[in-house]
Structure formats: structure tokens, C-alpha cells
Length: 399
Image (tube, rainbow, N blue to C red):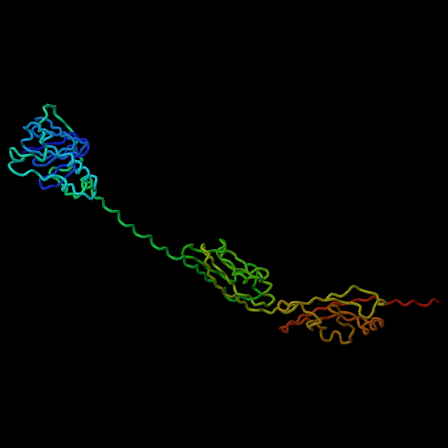
């Protein structure tokens, strides 16, 4: 069986088998007996036959059939057997046309008596005789070509048919839709009820916990937990870590019997979403009773005593009721201490009456100024002080 190996080539070349299938050729490919070698117009192929007897060169624009006689025959004149110029031009046009069919342009393989047709018949191909050139042993790279006997059935450009089919890239999965940002949570818990007298600055009145699914724990120290606007306008509360404590203003409010407002807090996450919660601390009111302090004026001379002269002053107050006054009836003379009517109230002062002046002029010692303060709960407090006078001296007649 005649076979030929391509040892060099330029341009493009194809092999067509007896069934009309085309395959593109490259260096190292083997042509089988009965295959037709087709060369492009600007190409050439150099063949080496299996028996090692020599080399054949096929010029461009040729169709050559591989037969047993090919190794022994002389070169046939190209003008008698080459593809007509117009046929070659049509072939090259079909190669450039992706929609064209190369097999419709090429002539079918020869038929009749033997592989070259009858003895006197014309040929549709070129037989190339062996070139009289002896060469030494050859070695060449045959990787990259098609396996012997492998054919590709194409319906257009042979170069397109020979290309490997490229797997399409898989369609990427769509990005998952991000979950919407969840709002934070906060829980405020007031401490148990405490006694009024136990209230001190820094005492814890409420605790809280706050968190967010994206941000984790939220704290007052980080500015994520604050007093809800308008809820701590009097400044009764302050933060101490994650606790809410009393300020001095808060202690004063408790001592005055003021009901504490709710501890209302707001948690804010990194996206600006907020949550609120509140709870109200309570305390047991303890009435400690009022206080009063009476202070007598310094000693004065009997002859200087006049009605309305101040003999004592006082201050009185209560934690729950605040300042206590005589004008409101919260401060009075202690029962039984001013029965003679020596004293009277003038605002928050105790002054002499006419009875008091008469008593002084008569040399009577004035009683203590004794006052009682009473709060709204009925609790009382007493205090007193004594105003002293210097007796008037009467000159004796001389003897």
C-alpha cells in the first residue's frame, strides 16, 4: 500500500478521502493510498514515501491522488492534468466563504479502469513522479497532527472544520440578594423599689441591654445608646457604663418627694435604625419632718425698744414641702409661749408688739421666742431663742 508523509509545507493543504471527507494537513501527517492531496494556490507540500526511495514536491494549486503507481511514474505535465485556473479560483473562493461547500466545487474522484482512469482518458488530478534526490535519514516533529485515518466531515471552510469545538462558558449564578438590615433591640429594666432616705448620687436606678444583628452589642460608651430626646431634660439620670444612675438633681427630686420620670433609652445601629424602651424607677417616700432654726437678735437697751423692732429671725424647711413660712401658716408660735402677745410675725421675722414694749419698760424679762414648724404630713419641729435687754438706769437725786 502506498503511503506518503508530509515532511514540509507552506500555505495550506487538505486531504480528501474516497468518501469526499476533507481534513486539513500539517507537517508529519500521513496520506493514505487513494486520498487526494489538495494544495492552496500559494502553498506547496513535500512528501516522503514509506519505501524511502525519494521525495516528491507538490506545487500550489494542485490536486494529487496517492496511488501505487505514483512512486514509479514520471511527472505528468501540469498543463494536461492540473486543475483549470477557473476551477482553482472557485476553490479558493469557497475556502474564504464560510457558507460555501468545498465538496461542490471539487471534482469527484476518478472512476473507470484503475486509479488514474482509462489508458487514454483525461485526468482530474495530477500525478507527481518521484524527484531524483536521495537524502539521509530524516527526523521531524509529528506532534499536533491528526491520527492516521482520522477524518473530519465539514460543510464549509476546511480551516473552520478543523478547529476544535469550544465549550461555552457556563452562565454564572446570580449574586444572592442581600438580606435587609434588621433593626436593633433594647431592653430597659428599672431596679427594685428603694427607700427615699437611701437615695445617693451614683445609685443605680435602671440597667439595659442593647444589640443589633449586624453590629453586635450596642453600648452607651460607644454612643449607640442614649437617653431618648426630651426624657431626661431635668438631668435626674446619667450613664455609668451600662447602668443608669442618679445625679444630685435626681437625689434632690427624691428628697422633695418628686415622682421620678421613666428611664427612656434609644439604641441606634450603624445604619441609623433605632429602637426605644423605657421603665420607671420607684421609691418609698419617707417623711423626716421639717426643720426650724430660731435666732434672737443681739442684746439691746431697754430705752431703744420700739413697736415693730425685730427680736428674732427664723428659717424652716421640709424635704417634701420645701421652705416653710409663717405667712403660709407652716410656722407658728409654739403653743403657750406667747400668750401675753409680746411678739408678732413680720414676714420671716419676729418683732415686738406694744405689749412687749410695755413689758420691757416695766422691767419684765421677755420670754424666749419659741416657734413650731409643721409640714404637710403633720410632722413638727420646734426651736427657740431669747432676746436680752439691758435695764434702763434711773438717776438718783443728790442730797
